[in-house]
Length: 320
Image (cartoon, rainbow, N blue to C red; front, top):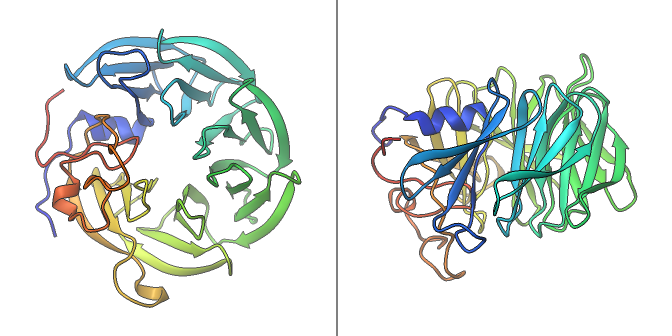
């Protein structure tokens, strides 16, 4: 177990709103991080070369979900207190479009190919699909109190956390057909959902549970529970799917999960690091063979390299 260290403001940003990056190649001289500021109704822009906030972008009340397209050109922000998803151009750091998705929009997810954004309408009992080329809603599917969700790489399949009292469930949507395809009843409210890059497993969290749950998407059965600490939220994956990074809100930690550890369904993943400091930098792996994404990379080495399009984990805290 790694030595526990205090979290900097970066981990606070992660639990308050998503911390994401825009590639330097888009238009900026250095990678930029984007942080949703729920109480300030804004998105902060961070220059990661200087380690400082260089601007804020006003958005409608209560930014809730925040995702960036894989090419780093657009940031999508939902607002809990409004009915719009705001589209930010990372070149100008301005809102360039507003998409009506209905009241109380919660989580967002982006497909691996960058062509689709999933918007969850908690207040309207809908899941909506946005085409990122036109920034228009192209599909709507009924899902009661949809909170968070995740998309397959090609955007054809979505998994959504549904939170109605007495009917909490994971709902699989066939977005090509525009309908519900499967339902997995739960005894607690689902929180964050993340689909592995190959689409074979769904990592999700539950209100009141200290573990990451692992669902096999072929059988729709929960095959593992990974203890990580109080109140885990999201657990996004590295591009190769080898590691998952779980934001654990209770102790203010980031847990690194080895998704291939052990043998058998019950031992298919385990927590190998806790207490590391999260820092958003933004140089993605140069190639599939890069040690940044190698299946042989150790957890400690992992914390010194870019591990996904959203996270940078150095070995020691970095001051803001």
